[in-house]
Image (cartoon, rainbow, N blue to C red; front, side, top):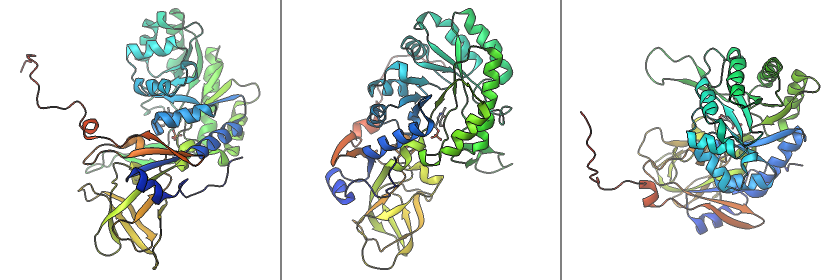
Length: 408
Ligand SMILES: Cc1ncc(COP(=O)(O)O)c(C=O)c1O
């Protein structure tokens, strides 16, 4: 049974900040495992749950979820290698993504991963690499969602699926599954002029009726091509506590005796199990303070409001307070008008629901990336050390002459 959502970090925030410095990502190992187990239980034993690593690619997070019985869903060779480093066998990895190198695809085919092909080009690439496939390799085709098919940039059009299956069959590769991902980010029509180029809206969780329609769509396609043993319905699911109507709608749409299911939750498993600790470094007048973390470390705050609290609230009336980041950008605001007690430089603040699409998308723009720790059973373990200058600057050096001639 999932425990009640505990909004506070899993250990004394001030102690963690003193020990590991700020900014600091903090994850709750027990909560991760509890979310994962509850999510799997909400679907039942016929469904495979694969954690979408793009949401939080820390090896320690995937390893913890793997210990709780969860597969990994990866969208690149880098994520595939991170999953393997986390101890996930190839046979428990779903390999998605619109671009895979030959080496990456051949490795996944050889290790018995569930390989999802995204385009006609990837179908031909797999055909070319068929000799590397392990016996019984699991090949799936990604299909564009029925309601966005004309403009969707992922997956094959439904009408192209039978021909793609025939191309693979000629190389001895059998399509055993179909995949569809609806996605919480939806593009609206771009404005005629001026920024932004995309009008993006986030609808999370994805509405239940979209899942039901997409499930019926891939099931019908599967019957058309034959031999489909599993359907992968992608991500965008709510956490376990809200799953009952989703499972009911999907099973209703599929009817009795449907193929096995795979689901790929990302934020449902990790969003509420992560926090970001940050210290106030300056006051800007009114109820505005500068903190030591910017929007580069919590990009998710651009899409949605996260809970923000003072770790040791001072006496005094709470006021609508802005937390400004340290990035020298006017729009670097990590929280706007949140009710907080008076804050002074040195005070510690935590941002909740920071487990998904925060550290994953963090960048070393202006400041290096923070450390990440996981707390479980009263102990803190480092998942990633604070980024050093050498890591932040990567392979850069004074220009190194290579002697390579290039044409104008
Ligand atoms: C193919 C695929 N599966 C799963 C996910 C996870 O989505 P969410 O975090 O909304 O559950 C994503 C996210 O973009 C995705 O692209």
